[in-house]
Image 1 (cartoon, one colour):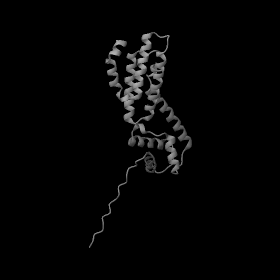
Image 2 (spheres, rainbow, N blue to C red):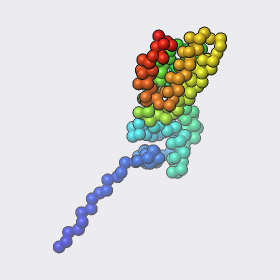
Image 3 (cartoon, helix red, strand yellow):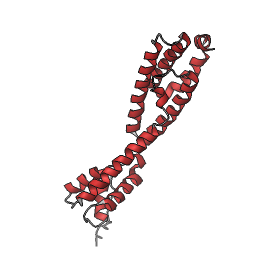
Amino acid sequence: MEGRPIKTRRQKQPPVTKRELIVAVWNRLGRGSIGESELREIQRSIGGQFGPRAEESPAAIARVLADEGAELRHPEVIEFDARWREAKIESDTARLKGFEDLLTGKPLRLIKAEVLIKRLEKLQNNSAQAGDQTTLKQLRNMVVNARHVAELLAKDRTLAPPERAEQAELAEWLKVWIQTPNLFEDWLDLRRRSPDFRKKFG
């Protein structure tokens, strides 16, 4: 007698997209109405599966669940989303704190500029590893603006020639950083060893 094929229970595949995860967590929570506590739980799950930089706003999560038929506790969702966005802005600002000297419009000595650019590199590398495109874009925009400031200072006839030379050099550094941030450290080391650099800056 032929045996019947053994039925194996199909293992449920874990959610592969954020949307699928959002819906899966809502199902796990009992498909109840959505407010701050539920949104926080979903945000934690997203961070746990996709990493801390893959966060979604409360409003974005609420929209997904509304499409799935969830009842939203609207005032609670709106207030939580506003607080979340305010905290995110403060966090983003804090990450870029300390780079203001690149944008003040005052001449920046190369020694201090090098320290700041090394900090920029560290933040850029950490953001790239975390997939944090927002911070990467903010960094690039800031460096583009800093280069523009340095170019203007290099042409400012009210500054002494050595100061103008430093600003022109800084503008070149920033140009290289914008074009190839991953190669900047090696490039700067070669640049500082060059006869031209030593002649200009000792």
